[in-house]
Image (cartoon, rainbow, N blue to C red):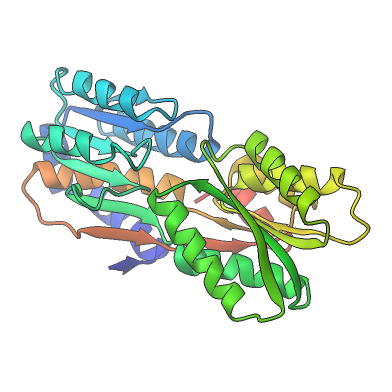
Length: 311
């Protein structure tokens, strides 16, 4: 089920202003939030949104940070389940152990709200995420257009196998397949979606492929690193760089022309929607299995509105 940002925002406003939701909120006094890492702005925005919105409903939020380690996250979730949480908002730290925390929470009778990354074999009560395929297609199509439809391209992936990495790769490949004069000559996978990784991976790939003129980093951190590597490469030609997520710092860099395009996700909307969904599931209400929010193509021309008011 695809839900636009506007419809979700309206639904959140309408439901949170009703007496029924406030009654349901009284049944949820404590939420556990497990995040992969809090070094990424993307996850920080979701964390802040969940905590701020939870506080407005008099809900305590206990946040645990796995620092990108699946085993750590499983241990953290086991500990959360001993703290009398009424609902569990879960962003898996990796594909390998993504099913275990959901299974543990379900066994304890606790509602599970998956955000950003899903576990296909053990899904939660709902999955909230940004749409990835169409948005990545738009970013890569924009990059290819800037390069006049021809050239050599690199793709710097996120963590292999997690939902965003899979979807963003699929969307970008659709754009490449539509342009026979564009060749994907190199791709590498990161572990932390970080700027340092984006720089190191892009630097190595650029040395091996000096004619590259397009780079897609599957997260803004990767794109920022790729842009730095492109600038340091000494290439005589323009290298167009695209990212994904709409991180606050990256939006400012995009405005300054550090890189060329991203897709801004509604991270704060996701956080509020996760809390509302937890309340509804705890109250026995039926909610959609998937709640997908479109990301918005963002360039230097329209970036200011996202800087002024991040969705």
